[in-house]
Image 1 (spheres, helix red, strand yellow):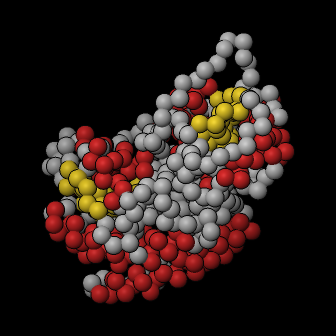
Image 2 (cartoon, one colour):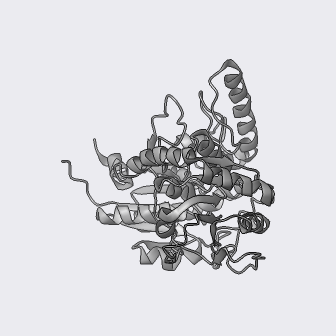
Image 3 (cartoon, helix red, strand yellow):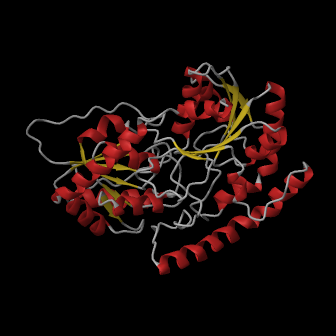
Length: 417
């Protein structure tokens, strides 16, 4: 076995909800291998980063929030706001990443999907550069549409034409920020891009932290793509919620679990609560940080609302999960063989929900679905064991992928000849 000298890794990230467990996992994975990990992020992250063994470096410009719950993406108002954060602030990310590389003699830069500018800083310094995707593939390819649209690949002639057209639209949207990135590249003597998506392909390694069995990979896969399997860790803020149930209570448990970040989800949660209030089920609503201070109308005693709970403790007992279709929530439900009702709110959630429905492991609804529609979907899933069987089948594949080689091993491969 080839010995890998200990390296200094710099991870660059900001709060995006579902990206935090994979970031913390990556820190710990590298630490276990004896490497030093530095984290450049928003000031609120300091205590959490240091408690996981990272050396923390705060952003000094723009990404300066000290309160974790504060939402800077605001993509529930306009889905393109996320792109404005990712690319519109690229100069700040490049500048502060460069400073960190020089100050701490960094060997490798790991850029979160939300901070792709860090890749350019590593390119400028001529050191290995890695991008972390905390969700399924997002980029378009010969056999798949771009992410964010909630549609599946279609290999028919119509499907290929559709995907070609959608890929052009994807580049038109992304390329609005191309002048910002190319200005930076020109300043440092780097070759300019024709399309902004080329930035992702400059990474020496693009780690997609999901199950290849769940995703629809680009075929043939780009040479820099590696599927790590999903990170199944619960969020750091999730508490321990014991399941209390008498032996006589045979009502199925239905868990309502929506985003940890704000996506204007209060009315959707309320509709879900009203849906369960008229079913013979036990409803458990886990609010998460974004909603834990909100008040809800609870019309029936069969629904309990709590601030948060670890999915690992409650999903094994659930008959159904109602969710926004965040990647982490879906992965944790499926590995426990639990089918889902998905009401995507944005981001990658429509894509995730479409996949759940494709595998027969749940039902996809609009976020505007009425309590009656939600109630019918839950009833259909509970009364039809096929949904649970399909969830167990795809969940078994996801679990196997999650037990693959660690992210740290893939990162160390950058130094193997």
